[in-house]
Length: 293
Image (tube, one colour):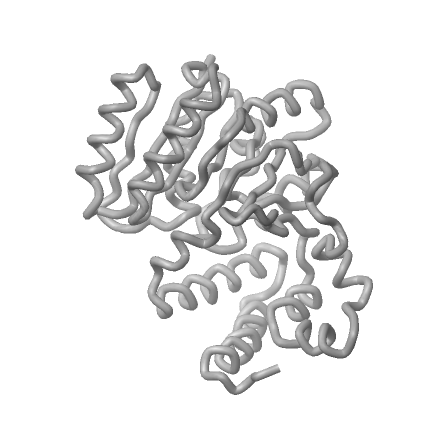
């Protein structure tokens, strides 16, 4: 049985994709125990991605490609990748990452040794060496309202964040130590394949946003635990693919996924619609510069 299935999406980042896979080969001596599933969401780069895959096969990689005629976005594309996966573990990996150590192996070893955990996330490091503040508790409406509007900026200017909202973000934790968390960043994380299958993958309603919260919520429903492993490091070009989206795409996806995330949390159509409306108003303030706090 394949040990790890590594799923990587490409959206106008083929050169970064090549750098990422090459860094896995360089830093993971056991890479031949893994399989790589590349989902290409940018038709214009299909031939380039196919050429890279041919080169990797010549190096002994167990690798295949899925070539979409249009951008399937994050969640549906990963569902596609998982259908082809045969590994004991499934690794979500952004194309805009690169390794300098055997971090995937560290994650595998952790889950092998800790059967009470089912998902583990790694530490994302910006190219300048700064550690990204990933991970949070699962959101309730008040926490999301606080952090995703200018309310948090007002409190920061007034001298402090209320304890409840600091706790939600793990605000005082520097991410240099390992700990149990409720959600990890999907840019680099590893899950037991049987567990991802049990929760139904990313479902059918989400496209791009809320995937880490969705997955964390589904795991929590089944009393399954998630861990952040600080020594599993990867360098990450933060939000590279997101920057490729137009503003209309960005906010359309955000509105769509916010609505279906809260529908999944039990809100009615009207309730979820009102949540989306309120957040859309606040986003309009930010977009058009009405809020300068």
